[in-house]
Amino acid sequence: MPRKSSAADQPLRLDNQICFAVYSAAHAFNRVYKPLLDRLGLTYPQYLVMLVLWERDDVPVKDIGEKLFLDSGTLTPLLKRLEAAHLVKRTRSREDERQVLIALTAQGHALKDKARAVPQSILAASDCSVSELVTMKDEIVALRDRLNAVIGE
Amino acid sequence: MPRKSSAADQPLRLDNQICFAVYSAAHAFNRVYKPLLDRLGLTYPQYLVMLVLWERDDVPVKDIGEKLFLDSGTLTPLLKRLEAAHLVKRTRSREDERQVLIALTAQGHALKDKARAVPQSILAASDCSVSELVTMKDEIVALRDRLNAVIGE
DNA sequence: TCACATTTAATTGTTCGCAATTGAATGTGC
DNA sequence: GCACATTCAATTGCGAACAATTAAATGTGA
Image (cartoon, rainbow over all chains, first blue to last red; front, side, top):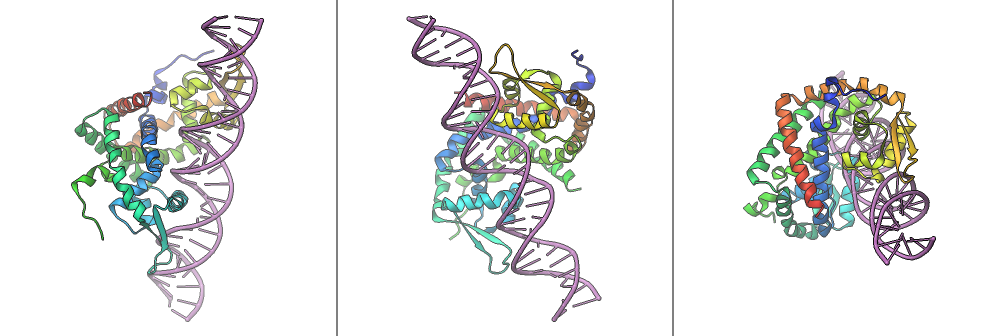
């Protein structure tokens, strides 16, 4: 027999869960990005790595991982694919042979100009004012940082 | 030579992108959920499927996919793993042989009680009032729905 | 110096997520 | 009734994401 929906079930309802809101919004973003990034020959995580490198070049894998909250298990194969696409170069550091430094190639640098169109398209798709998005972004980042703080315990 | 940071670069800065806020928050949630869901023997996407089924049982794969924004390529293997864990049963519909109906087993139903502890722990980890979370959730859902509307064009 | 811990990438194995394709079942227009 | 399109799940292949392990380089303490 079907059970009656009870007040005790409310916290378990899908629509009440902020995590699902975030999870499904992340996928929605991914789907909006897909056609834009296809033109650049990048996946979304690859695009994030390129964003990091466009800000600062010649950094160890670890630094990229800290900025994106990703580990080497994710980044190593991703960076190898970027290298195969001639966008980055991977070289062992002279000072510390454990580190692999990631540097942009000329092609990698050049891609930045093509990438400038992307945030504009995303803004349009969001159908939202910049100030609203900035407020939301800050709230989500604050939540993320509180969650990450709990993990480190 | 290193290029000077310019105003034109601002939209490309990682910290300015709401999509990265959402993306990284989703991963942070995942990491907080991990130890909680390990006790239930579920991954996070599996947990989402169970949330759907706890609300309504005996539904075709497609219905689950519409609620979670996932397709059969993701759900079919996931549901087979849930079946292997004796939490659901997959049977072809009599009325429409194309459909596979997903029903909870007794174990699957029983797991709901153990799952009630999860949202409480997440709320605690969020370190945030319920009303704040509800507001954020509604904003994020609204954004997600606008993004999804663009995709369907 | 030498044993030991720490740091850093790489590797392996499992699970998502999705595009593209396949194949069977169903619905439709004529 | 029959060709045709549509619907639905399954499959295949690729790219994340992460846990756990490995291996090499570096740092530290006695």
